[in-house]
Each structure stands twice: as structure tokens, then as C-alpha cells.
Image (tube, rainbow, N blue to C red; front, side, top):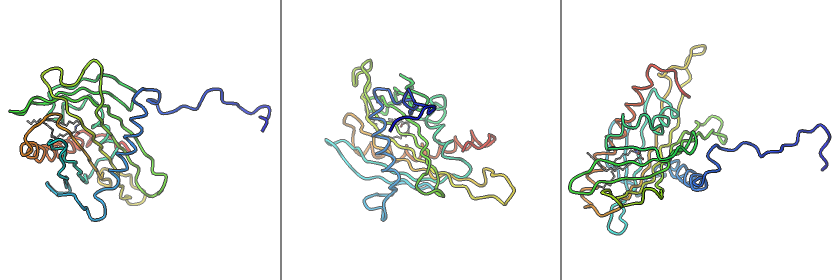
Amino acid sequence: ERIKSGTAVPVTPPPTCPSASHRLWPEIEQVVHQQVAWARLGLGDSGTGWQLFAEDGEMRMYRREEEVDGMVVDPLKAVHIVKGITGHEVCHYFFSPQYRYDWETTLEQMTVLETIADDSCLFLQTHKRIWPASQRDVIFWSHIRHLPNDQDRDGPDIWTVVNHSTEHKDYPANSGKCVRIFLTVCMLCQTRVIPPKEGTPITRDNISCKITYCSVVNPGGWAPASVLRALYKREYPKFLKRFTSYVTNQTKDKPIMF
Ligand code: 16C
């Protein structure tokens, strides 16, 4: 059809997501879609195959026992409900490098190798050594995303952060004292608002955040299965409790970030 005179003709493509032209973008898109779908499945109808290994208040952690080449790579799925915070706040503190030393207790050093865009960063982290295993490091991209709920208008929006291992030519794996680990992590959050009495504003008493945290970590080199399982049974609950308390503390006197 001919364009009528006076009709604005776009000369440049419409703006896209800020990271879209980066070399990692196709992988980020694919892994984020896959991880969000996996996290949204929850534990499935009957929780088949998932073993509960930690429980504390509203927090429940499940794992599947899996090994690859004799190495423990047990997938983890955790669910938690925390009052007084939003999914946007949880994801903001999980994604942003400036807070990481405050809550990440296994961290020795974190370097931002690249800021891909406001919503995506490339990290190099070294973690504390656990004797007698070698020290571990990891390179991963991290991406934060808001997924508005367009299917069910009454359903909650989703905020998510996905972390996924990648390579970097300047930091080849296993070239120094560290063994490189490989991970895929998804923090997925849904905020629930209990409507306050008519005419009164929403306060932190009216909100809660349902968190689903999924993780698969490949230790990258052999370590005894019993040591690894004992380690994550202790460290994952410690992490999720400490991290969510941190977000609660950081936000309690701040305006709610929806
Ligand atoms: O998701 C989390 N954190 C993110 C931001 O840092 C990101 C990074 C995750 C790194 C997870 C691997 C950490 C391995 C550390 C090695 C153990 C040191 C223990 C020192 C104890 C004094 O996604 C939160 C992550 C919460 C981590 C819980 C620990 C899981 C252990 C899994 C087994 C790793 C193999 C270690 C081989 C020795």
C-alpha cells in the first residue's frame, strides 16, 4: 500500500533492549527464557523427584541427586516467602555489584569484567577455599529483567536475575591456582499485594515476595561427593536467609520499589 503523504515513516528500527547488540545477547535471551520457564514450574504438581533437604519458616529447599563424570551437580530448587519486600528490590540487591560483598559470604574477590548494559554484567569471582579442595573461581554473565504479566492481568509481575557461566579470553579456566566452576542460577520473584483499606496507602505490611531460587553448580574438578553435599546443605540455606534479611534491612526505611 502506498504511504499517504504526511504519514511518519520510521527511518531507524524501533529501540530494542539495551544489551541486544552484544555478542552474548542471543545466549542471554535463550538462557533467560529457559530458566524462567523452569523456575515457574515450581516443584511440579507432586514435587516428584525433589527431596526436601532444608526447611526454616517459609523457606524450603529441595535437591535432586545428580552426578556427571563422578562429580556432584545436584540441581537445587528453593522457595521462600518474605514479607515486606518486593521482587524488584530482591532482584536489585542480587544483581547489583555494589552490594555483593555485604551478603555473599563465600566470596573472596569480585571483579566486574564488563558492563554489557544497565541490565547485564560480566563477573569474575573467586570464592573462599575449602580445605582440602582447590580454590574455585567462576566467570558468569548476570542479567536482570522485569516480565510484566500480560497473560493474567490479576497475576503478579515477575522480576528475575539469571546468572550463567561463560568464557573470557583474558581469563582462561584452570590457568592459575583456581579450578573454574560452572553455574546456572535463576532468582525469580513475584510480589503479592494485599489491598489496604480503601483510601489508605500501601505499606510494607501489605506486601510479600515469593522467591524461587534455582541453581546448578558444576564444581569443575573432582571433590568428594559427601563433602560437596554437606557444603551446599549448609551454605544454600545460610545464603538465602542472610540475603533476604539483608534486603529487608536495606529497604525497611526506604520507599517501596515496585
Ligand atoms: O547465587 C548466589 N550468588 C551469586 C552471586 O555471587 C552467583 C554466584 C554463585 C557462586 C556459587 C558457587 C560458590 C562456590 C563456593 C565454594 C565454596 C566456598 C565455601 C566456603 C565456606 C567457608 O550466582 C548464591 C550462592 C550461594 C552458594 C552456596 C554454596 C554452594 C556450594 C556448591 C558447591 C560448589 C563446589 C565447590 C567445590 C569445592
